[in-house]
Structure formats: C-alpha cells, structure tokens
Amino acid sequence: MMRVQSLSEGGIAEVPPRYIQPPEDRPPIHDDVTVIDNRDEDNIPMIDVFGFDSEQRDAVRKVIGDACAKWGAFHITNHGVPFELLDQIRGVGLSFFKDYPVEDKLKYACDPNSPASQGYGSKMLRPEAEAETSTVLDWRDYFDHHTLPLSRRDPSRWPHFPSDYRQVAARYSDELKIVAQKLLGLISESLGLPTSCIEDAVGEFYQNITISYYPACPQPHLTLGLQSHSDMGAITLLIQDHVGGLQIFKDSQWITVHPQSHAILVILADQMEIITNGKYRSAQHRAITNSSSPRLSVATFHDPAKTAKISPASELISNSSPPKYREVKYGDYVSSWYTKGPKGKRNIDALLVNS
Ligand SMILES: O=C(O)CCC(=O)C(=O)O
Ligand SMILES: [Fe+2]
Image 1 (tube, rainbow, N blue to C red):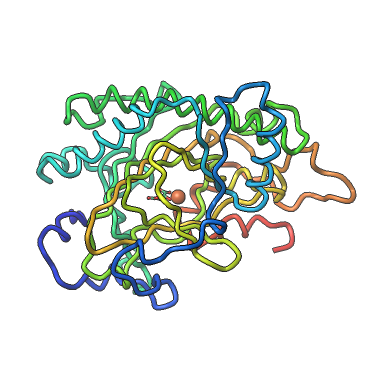
Image 2: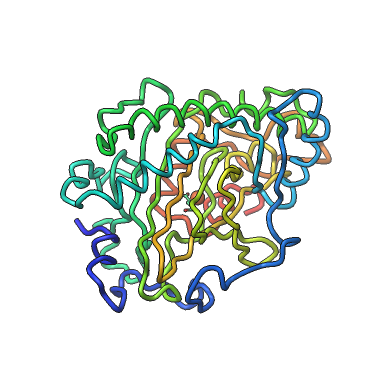
C-alpha cells in the first residue's frame, strides 16, 4: 500500500499522474506557501474567549456570532487547553510520521475498504473508481483515531511509539471535548437559542482525531494536500504547525490561515449549517502543499451519532423563515459523502429544500 511519505522521501522530481489536480482545482503557482499571503484585515478572526469566563460572555458571544456568520471559521485564544498539550500532540504526531520506518507504521494501516476506519492511511482509490480518470489523490498521509464516546476508544489501536503517544492523545481528546461543548453553548446563545440547544441537537459527541502529515511535494502547483471540502460533522477544532498550507474559501477567494501555534482554529461543519438553518454556514477549506517542508495538522471532529436525525432547530423556523434543509439521518449523510466525495460543498447543497 503506497504512502505519500514514501513517494516524497524517495526523491521523485515529478508527482505521479494520480496526484495531479485538474487545472481548475490547482492552487496558484507558488514555491513556498508564504508567498500566498493576504493582508491582516482579510485574515480570519482571532477571538479571545477569556477562559469562557461568565463575566465576558456577552461580548464573546457577540464576536463569535459575527465570525460564524461571516466566516464559518475563527481562531480562539484563552481556550483553557494547556499550551504544553498542544505542543505535545503535535510532537508525538510528528515523531510518529518522521522518526519511524514505514514498515512499523503499516502495522496500524486502516482498512482501505471501510471509510473513516481507524488507523494509518492515505486516500485510496475505491476499486470502482479505479477506472474514473477524475479521481485525484491527496498529497497526504494521516492517522485517524476514534476517541469518543469512550466505548469507541481503544488506545491499543493507536501508535505505541513514541511511548507517550497514547496518553497524550487521550488527554487531548478529553480537553478538546470540553472546548467544543463550551463553543456550542456560545454559538447557540448567539442565535438567541437556549444554551444547550445545538448540543442537544447533535447529541452525544462522536469525536475523531485525525493527524495529517503532508510530505514536501516536488510540484506543489499541481497538487493539493487535501481537496476542497467542508467537514461533515458539527464542529471541528484544528491546530497546525508553523509551516502553513490551510486555506479557507471566502467571497470567491482562497485565504491562507496563518499558523498560530497556541490558538485553536474553530471550523463550522455541515450539521451546524443544517441546525442553524443556514444562518451559519460550514466553512469550505483545503490544504495546499509546498516543496520545502512537510506539514502537520491535528483536526478534532465532533459529530452526531450515525442514528441521529438532524434538522433545522424549530426555534429558528417560522412562516417567514421556512426550513432550508431537509431532515437527514447523520449516517445517511456520511454514506453519501463517501460515495460521492466532497468536492466543495456539494453534499450539504444536496439537502437544500430548493435544490
Ligand atoms: O490539514 C489541514 O489543515 C486541514 C485538515 C482538514 O481539513 C481535515 O482533516 O478535514
Ligand atoms: Fe476539513
């Protein structure tokens, strides 16, 4: 089974055809991600949440509401997660990819036939897609961890090297769940909904942590680390290293998210768009590659149960504001996402009442 890291470290000068994006999806020509820059005022909001302190709640709720409406993504600081834990999860992740031979890592290979299976993977061609010349592979390897509910958490399936990997990942999962819950409370209130409204609509969190490793790429102008998509669940909390490469699509432009080592990037995902009846939209994003440095990110996804039925919150529906999305069973949404592939926001758009 091919891993992108092996291709990259093998020293190829040209990427194999399967990794070449169609011209319309290619990023602008660049040698280094820092070349694609944007002015500060165009960058995504940085919000101090003051440790979710109740005295600051009114002000924080207001700026979060604005950021959700305008961007669907924003950085938060003073989020309560210890900086050292953010550094540790990046550290163990990077060590797993960089310090150990691929043979050892392949013992954790995820099942290529079942989407979102836990373990070490790269985007693979589905057998039925093999003939589709349009299927392009991402320039990315990853490790996917099932972390919550606790009944899904089996650290024996996570890397045993470096030695503190499993302990760090478990602690990171617990801390990030708390942040996600607090954010959903603020986001609910920002729409005039009861604090628990969105969390109740999502139900018990199904949390997955994906550590992505994007090897250096000899032809960054032809590839994408991760193709354009919106996340399928409710809310994603992402941290990245200092390299940069994550971009958000806003007002018909790709905007690079500058790395902020101790801030957490909040990304609204598709179920939030449904629950808020489109008042807040999920953020479309992608990762570009570069020719000089490998890049690491840690994405923590919070999703509904597969059995959960998701529909616009009744409080937001009235004669003058009819439902914009059809109700969907989350498991059906996930299956269709994996069958069709992401391609921007086409999966959520398919649920629009007027589509
Ligand atoms: O690597 C990144 O910054 C983006 C990762 C991502 O979007 C995802 O895993 O869904
Ligand atoms: Fe994503």
